[in-house]
Image 1 (tube, rainbow, N blue to C red):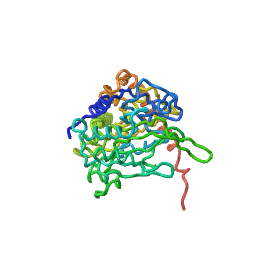
Image 2: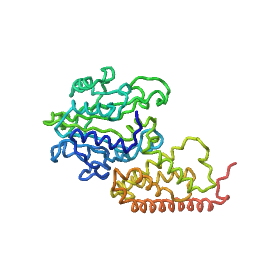
Image 3: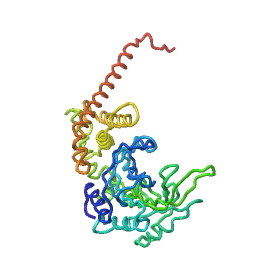
Image 4: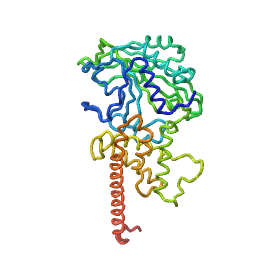
Length: 409
C-alpha cells in the first residue's frame, strides 16, 4: 500500500464520508460542556450525546469528525502505561462517522469495508482483516444480521468471530442508548507478537490490533427494580470510532504508533531538547543505533495532551482537570530529568506539536505563545519544588550527628 501521512489519513477519512452525504463537524473541546459525568472528552460521540438521546435536533442526520480525546483520569486511565506500550496514549484522535436515525447496519458495514479495502482509499489487504460481532446474551440475541451484512461485503464467514458483551456490546452508561457492535482488527503479523508464536485470531492482542469499532445503537437502556430493561429505539443510529494513530500504524507499515509520522518527529524533538538541557558533556543517549528510551515517548505523548488541554482552557492546578494536566506535565519533566535534563526543556515541545497538528486544529496556532508561557511557568515552579525538597533533605541529613545514630553491639 502507498505511504500515507497521518494528516492525509485524517483528511481521506473525512473526505470519504463527506462523499457519502455526511456533514464534516469540527472536533468539540476536550472540556465537555454540560456533561458532569466526564472529566475530559474521551470519544467521538460525546458531542452528539443529546442528539442520540433525541433531546437535540440538528440540521443534518449524518456527521463525520476527527475528535480530539484525552484518557488520563477517572474510569479511563492508562497513564502509567503510556510510553511503555505500542498503543497507549493520553491524547489521541478518534475518527468517526455517525448516523442519527438515518442509515443503519448494512450501510455502516459497507462504508467501512469500502474505505478500508478499496484501492481508491486505504487499500488494506482483505486477508489481514478480521471482524467481530456480538455473540448474544439473555436479553439480546446473537447479531446474525451484522454477520450477514459482513458476508455480503465479501468477508469470509471464518473471519467473523462472535464475542461477548464485554467486547461487543456498547452502552453510554447505566441508562441511555446502547447496542451491539462490530470491531475490525488488522493482523500486524508474527513480528508484532511478543511471544513470537504464530497464534490464531483473537489470541494475540499485540499482533491483532483493533482499528475500528462500529456501534449499532438500537436500544434504550433503563433500570427498574426488576433489573435493566432494553427498549428498541424508534430510530436506530450509528456511532463509529477509528483511532487515527492505530490506522496510521497500519498504513505506514510499522509496529508501534510511536513509529508513525504523528510521533516520530516529536520523539526526536524530545531527545534533542533533553540532550541540549543536559549539556554537551552528557553521553547518556549517544550510542549510535541504540533504541530510544521510553522516556522520549512519554515526553512526546504528554506534549500533545498538555498542548491541546491548555489550548482548550485547562490550566495546571491541584484539583480536577487541572490536577490531571499538572500530573501529565510533571511526569514528562521527570522523564526528561531521568535522561539527564538539568534545566527547562518541556515547554519548547509546543512548537513541534503545533507544526504537526496546527493545520487540522488551527486553535493551536493562535494559542501557541500562551501555551508556551503556561508550560514554562509550570516547569519552573516544579523545578523550584524539586530543589526545595532536595535542600530540605540535605538539611535534615546534615543535622543528624553520628552520636544520634543507633548503636549496635
